[in-house]
Image (tube, rainbow, N blue to C red; front, side):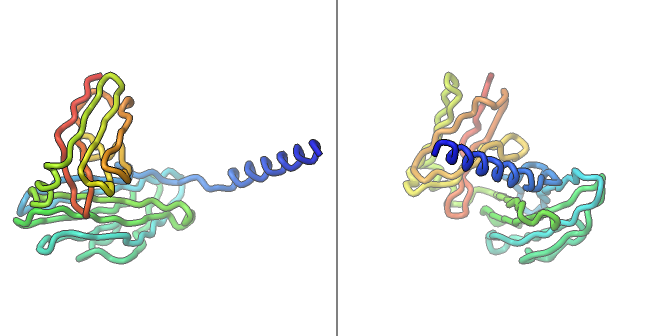
Length: 231
């Protein structure tokens, strides 16, 4: 019986190794990561760009599909890919070929006019030779200070404990919220979702500098105070 169990264990291990070996590696990287949190002034258009860096010696072709697009009525907003700028946000598409040494592009342009608010844009993107590897790109862009942000800000706070490098985000939003900790460029260093009114985050890996804390609820961004870490 022991021999049989050992034999089964060896077979399972061999299968796991074989499956791991046939899983394809991602043949591109994304800059900056997969989330951009930004701000745009009134009466101006800003573009927020994701680049797909070709890590191969050949060429890559990227396809994408819209996941979610929400922005205030009156804003002018659109998507550009590597080759085409659209009037709005297409449901799906395929960008021009990305050759060795070049980069792909997924860019959201926003002009809020004089209308305050926040936008959430998400697209799934994949390279056609590895369709099983899908990245979700997220743009969260705010203009002005919407009323709902001020209302939520009064019940949103955080506490940083430098002794244990812990960040506690707390809120009266009892059913949870999404959270982001970003650097000065808007790159999300930590992101996640809390299903309760508070969440504790380990920030021991953060270098000395200024960071921003955001929570996302009801498709609206809330910006907390600046977090300064001195390591």
